[in-house]
Image 1 (cartoon, rainbow, N blue to C red):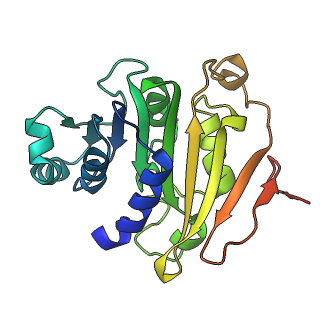
Image 2 (cartoon, helix red, strand yellow):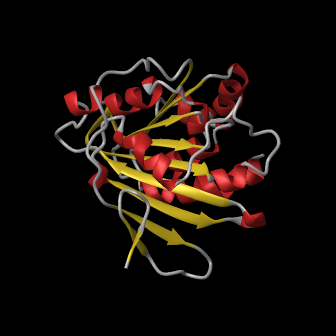
Length: 228
């Protein structure tokens, strides 16, 4: 599993681009590889993490023993909703292969939006629905799957502006197709009456396809149609 997650973690951290002195949160940190990478490559960064598994907490703490002991990293076990931090605490938030397990009512992703500061960045990696439907262990009873439009809507319904959501696809090893979402939190929330009582108005967004063949960028409208 570590080998399978290695490339998605690298791609997501590159998109996150943590800066010196920033405060970064990872949900579902697993054994702690991404936490260690962020802490090691960025001067003065302070890293937080939450995972629902006591076993993963133990492994991640052991992997990051020095950072934890020096107070540069704080790891907790617990649910994704509610999160035990104040509004706007984090500059960057990272979710790699964890959005499959978010609740269908939107509470988990709304908590992510709450703790992200205005101007902050959220990066999500998921394996695409087209790939996951081939995996017998990733059925609808256990995994919520996404295509590019689903992932964009997922973020818009949490409060992000559609114009602040960018989606990229990635061709990984063994024919795995991944999706990376980068969402910037604007100073003005869109989680207001238009979302509470109905769906926010659709806006155009870009789907940038990254692959080994350097395929050209496609411009998509909000309904998923390629714009010529």
